[in-house]
Image (tube, rainbow, N blue to C red; front, side, top):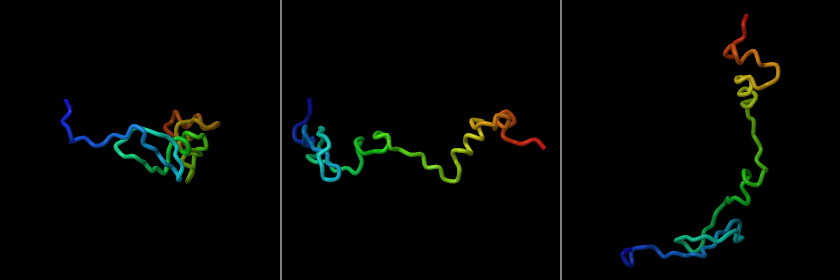
Length: 83
């Protein structure tokens, strides 16, 4: 049995705000929650995520594991070129 007067107040209809708009209601110990990112505006969930390739990291990875066209021989030799 739970002890009386030691648990926080439960708000079953707590409102979640993002950019000043109510985006959902959830159960919480706070009546209002203010968030910067939620699934409705996160690039991963909205499909607008872009791969930022700085310094050619994606190409270097693909070359290392032989996933690029024409680089198949380097994957079996450990990525080292024969002289």
